[in-house]
Amino acid sequence: MQDENPGEQPALPATHPPVVQQDAPPATQGLDWKGFWDGVKGLIHGGKKLGEQLDETTQTPADDALVGKVGIITAKVGAGKTGEIRLPVRGGTQDYLACAEAESSETIEINSRAEVVAYLPPNTVFVKPA
Image 1 (cartoon, one colour):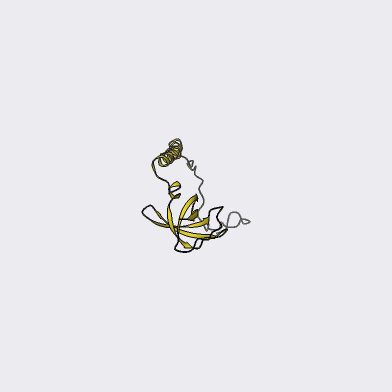
Image 2: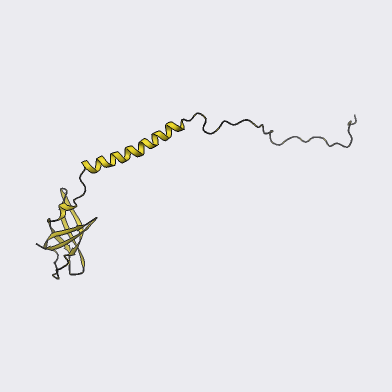
């Protein structure tokens, strides 16, 4: 049997199924964005309030509490040189960088006792012989 249109090519089978266009739902459908942002704002403002409360109620590491403490020199402290001191802090001991006080030219030897005269956060103290 002859084709009715001799100049037409036969249709080839499709290798992929045809794509059907569907109306996609908007990305925000079903989400409560106002509630979400209100919650985020509440966390931010609540966090600030919590931080203020913590500042008022918790103790900070021994800032002024270090001044006047006596510790043991674990690395020699000389004029213009940085050494190390072990101080009793919060029920234990902690090592701090130690500098001689400004007007002192004396060297403080290892295993000597020294008194803290100033504290420079986070871990530096100025000392004088005890």
